[in-house]
Length: 252
Length: 206
Image (cartoon, rainbow over all chains, first blue to last red):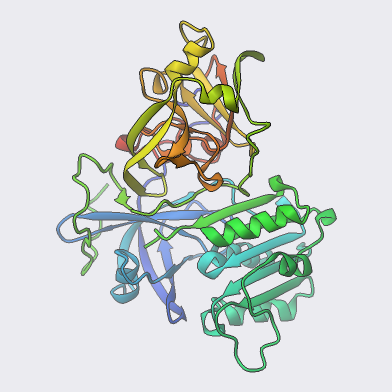
């Protein structure tokens, strides 16, 4: 099984994770702070699989990005409630502190950024696609050696901006970080930011120039990722410098 | 391990889901066609498209789009299973079976036991020849009677539905035989070397 490889395969075992705290991020989004006894550590951008077991033995698995940085003790999973979904309505409606479910990870060795990967860090997120990008920003924020970074973040309305206060605080204390919001369906009175879907002009204005060789991470629903990554390529960014993660309609 | 913790109040909402002999462990049925790729979708022109079959740097066969369309075309109906947990049942495709590709290259048998599939995007995935021959693998160019959209791997993708769908490499350009099994792109990033959904071989070590 391990031919052609160095080292031995380490199986990702299912572990019991316990809910320590639940943060209401927006009307449709909650973050579950999980205590995993023997967590092996993770890198910003990785995800976990969770497995729920019903009283009749029925099991369901889903994948969620880790929003917490490796420096934190608890694993933060930011979950959107999908109304006709199976797992997310349970997590939102039923889960309480002290409850347990199974989890395994970390998973994914590609959509990853650490300070060692280099800068500028260019993050483009749509909706809950901001979760793995937040792990990168939080990791960066914990470090002293961080360089230039930006997040272009598309939400439907100001109420639906996830991690809003934390992002505001981060930009206040960090001159190297720019956070640019666009609100696609409703803008509050006096809103001075963008008020439309991400387009090529917005990316040209917001992003680092291709000559700066930014490391780009794009995460969100598939149509969002398709268009944002295509615009980046059209603006002259190297396709191999653009890493994408798509949140399909199936994370329910 | 010990019995898993029970989630009070959690229950299945699978109405009319697939019979269990159609759905591998940990999967659920979707009617959508979700997309999973590591980078931007390449948009390829058919004019400079080609597919090559190689062994140790030697080209065993190479086909332009027109030549590839002239190879024997086989309709395929299959269930597909993505490692991200969705399965889609009864999908219909059309393309050239791997067996026919070998024949078209004048090969009576495969020259080596493994294959690395190379995509336009730089993506690679490794397969055992045993998972491709005998009607198990194909290079497909039609999905649901239409050309495959770029986002789903068009103009041509590998199609190996009995393995997790990441093995069915999008934007396929090259199949290189190799003597030993080397991990491809996702396989080097923590995913399983073979990826059999019925054994739930999702990750390295499963």
